Length: 169
Image (cartoon, rainbow, N blue to C red):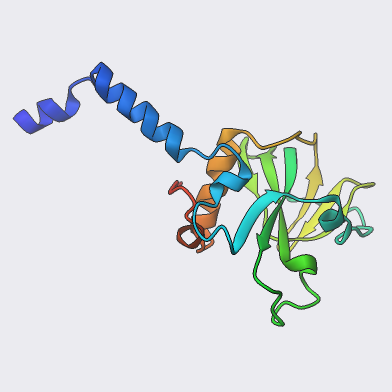
């Protein structure tokens, strides 16, 4: 019973400061900060114009899975020499995803790999779905999206490899 009382006791000022400092260290401040290990081999950042242009295509309007708001196109970049396994499929040794807010679910969302982007019709075809583009975000994503990205890296199986902060949903 004493253990329960101690566990349920309010945090003191020192405890709160320590908790705040731990959270500040854990929460990524940028896309680059999600990668905390093997930084010589892997990088996450905003997609370059060339990376996005390599996937430009006309997409016929169709029923979309969702509209992604405050979106950014992010690039997962392997800094290792290109391998032959994905040759032709992934220009420049990078995979692109859409990161933003799901209009339908009202929460953070990251897509599977982008296959085609139609900026004129504001559509993105991923490996699995067709998305509409809402309002574009500017600059680095907010902390909530960076936390969501970190969790996705773990769900997709490479979070530990890149040292992504351990967030799980």
